Length: 137
Image 1: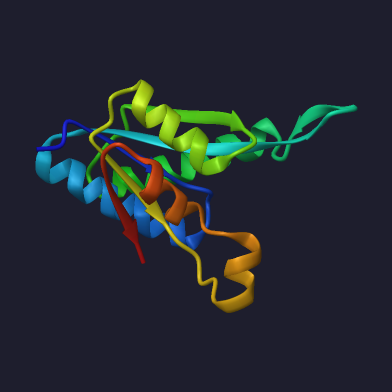
Image 2: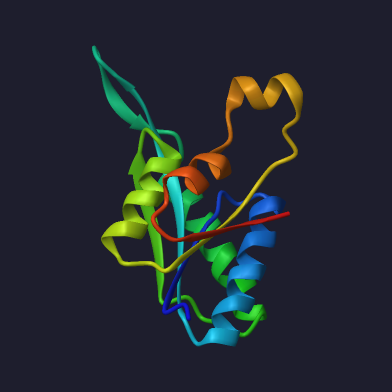
């Protein structure tokens, strides 16, 4: 049985489906729900690292996800803004560090060449996570 569920969101409608599912799972199992978003750091080498999103945008993403969870009957235990260059790696690292039993994430509608070029965060999470991963569609 899950004790701690991590839901990764980027504020898209695909991520809302993940938040809804994670909230439903948390409500049914009594698990603690953590909601996170990753603010991707750009730059480096000869330039300083700069976050992709302003703090206000990160807060909007997390607060929106918390509202979706609340409508499903769950109040998130934690809203977490992660900083990292690797989205999947940041999510997996948080999951391991905080002993999460389950990760729920969404996936976009990438097909063909765009999937090959852009990769898939959900696919990386599935391959790297130490625990159960559910990909909501």
